[in-house]
Image 1 (cartoon, rainbow, N blue to C red):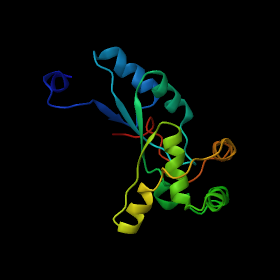
Image 2 (cartoon, rainbow, N blue to C red):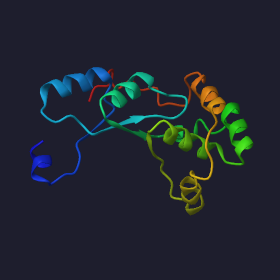
Image 3 (tube, rainbow, N blue to C red):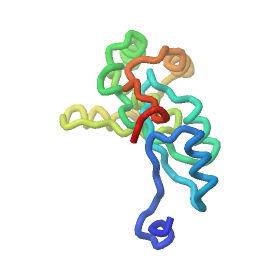
Length: 150
């Protein structure tokens, strides 16, 4: 908070904070975090955390929005990608954007980096979004931040 007030940092962010941890943090600090970076591929939707962050003006930044590649061959995502003439990775990233989530994909391949930037030439339909929302849990790390011993 001191660094933020002094202008040395432009934002305060946290990572992997659940609503319970955010409430605790906000009750014990003067400045609430501006960003919460959470695991957020289509198979690990963290709806409760997303809703809490939205309600409290905290930007959600998605780490591993492609599930480290584990979600890219899911039939629902591949079918939606085919319908749009896009890749499953682009569908995952666009899905994040359409929810107000900032995706943070990792790539060292120039072609994939270019593909990751090409997200603004299409939009997912409400039906696409409903299909993705209905996906069962899959492709996430399986780690519960409240159960990890940091």
